[in-house]
Length: 82
Ligand SMILES: [Zn+2]
Image 1 (cartoon, helix red, strand yellow):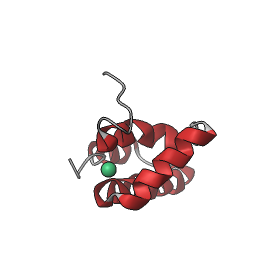
Image 2 (image 1 turned 120 degrees about the horizontal axis):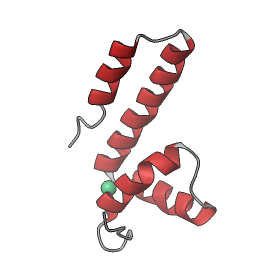
Image 3 (image 1 turned 135 degrees about the vertical axis):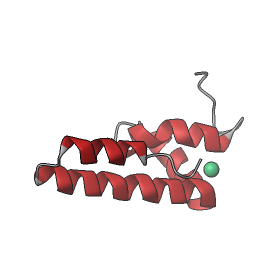
Image 4 (image 1 turned 180 degrees about the vertical axis):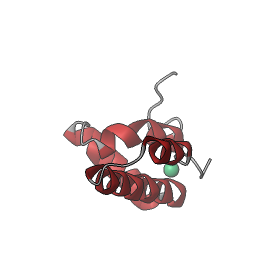
């Protein structure tokens, strides 16, 4: 997949940044760019909130030893906004 910049196709670039952003794996300048876009873009903002709440939910449930079948279901639910 070609890596796009925010200038070419902001939402697509934002999507590529989403996982590293949630992993806190972006550089400072990338993080600032991603946050700027998330604040201004309704679509990516919703997507981000969904991903974040999914991660929180998965973390909680993993701590309680989630059944593997349930984990698979959650992974399948990942991209409902597309
Ligand atoms: Zn966007």
